[in-house]
Image (spheres, one colour):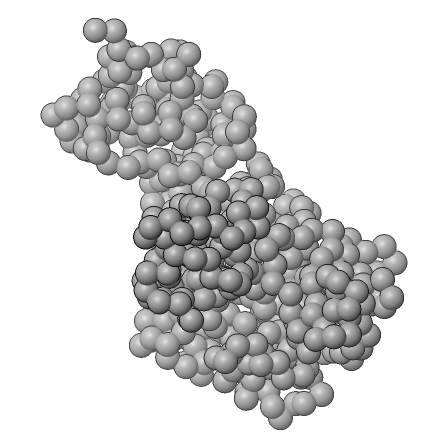
Length: 283
Length: 136
Length: 94
């Protein structure tokens, strides 16, 4: 591939190859200061399906060590998003050293708060906001559970902010990537994690609380049975089944040792309040 | 089966053979749930995907109302959409039971039934699996 | 009428963890699958560790170790449990 960019995020090294320079220039700017891997764990490729697709209505197909069929190519203007999605894909399909959970994570005093749930539930925005309020940001997309000791490893990639959440960070343009109008309903901008999150990305934390947030409802807190939590986490994991017995051990331990609540919230401020209250009680 | 439970002293023990109460419940009850791989999470939030209708090997054939692929001009069948269907629009149509953008009710029903019949290995199956939201 | 006979793997083919709400999470080593079992399924599976059994034998083993209640139809409900475990691959008909 003509152009290459390498970056280490938490314990994982990536190499991104690209037929175009622009997406990698954008990544270089946002990932400035991140360590660079000598030997990457995963390769992502951004390529043109047909030679003329490099130039005429350029469209980016995502490939790499692990690929999914049926993937829709993306416009070159969304190349940065394609690269991020490509990294997600490698982690989702190829990661075997950690149990991968679709969850955001923040840390305080060596203890991690995990937040998981459907897309749109608010886990990305909440983790980004808590990262500005005295918590160390560990990641907004994937939490990595150590198979030996159950610790949570940070994976602080660019935060995907959607729509209204972007406004919360507009006063810090140096941390923001280009505006990408993804669908008529959706806009994404990437946000660079706080500097302490990047500096401390190799510090793991013991999981101390798990939340299932839901955005857009009257405030409520609900306890959850361990069976429900276990099942929902198997669905929130990209590699639980592939990990076999090691995944079983890691997940059953997590479910039995970490207090869990479902929280509904109407806006992010109320969510932050609820999180702080629960952490004081449980964390 | 060695139950890894603890007795009153906190030591791991096999569950001893003593009479315990056991509630049996109805025959029709469901007491075993098997964990399935979460393909939805793997792909759904990661890539936008497309589903060709019908698969490329059947290009040009028509779709019957129940979603099976039939010869062009078969009575009651609709012509193919002429483009790949995007995962997002299929997800909305499956959720709401409504029409796919740009297609009428009958065509949309035929296409979504085609998609519901997809098996692993067929073009578009991964996309279809990824757009189904897990319950709860 | 001869009833179907079922068999389970020996106990060390499985890992079991009992969660706080009384449900058992089972990892089945031969298949790599994880199952969530609610009572009485774990007790039925445990009773199969003594060897092949049809429903009648299973009832005898359970009655020896438990006070059974909650149904008038022991055979029906326990056969149904065996069939559920069979669908999951945890027991089978040899």
